[in-house]
Length: 126
Image (cartoon, rainbow, N blue to C red):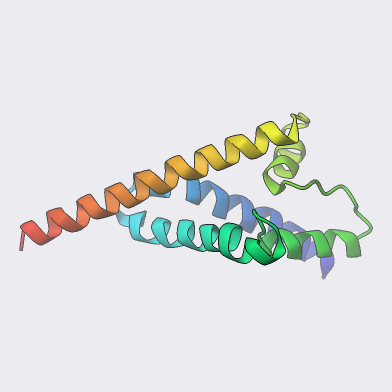
């Protein structure tokens, strides 16, 4: 069961992260993208007030699964962990975290802007 969950979290968390990064591009996914970005922001910055800024439930659950499998290769950044696992490159964790926040902020700003623009256009065309 834990092997399945390990694969599930790799796939789910990677797809979720990629969707956060590019979901704003496609008009049909913009609302969902804004929702997933808001969930991410809530986890990182609100729940993070109690559990540490950048906290993510998916990361916590995946770490627990990997520990049950006897794997103790976690880093403080899930994106860093994914990058190492997918590319084999072990970049500086702080660099990866900074890039993660920058990409998140850009994606969030674009998603909000495009959702507002789409809403205004829809309102004008009624």
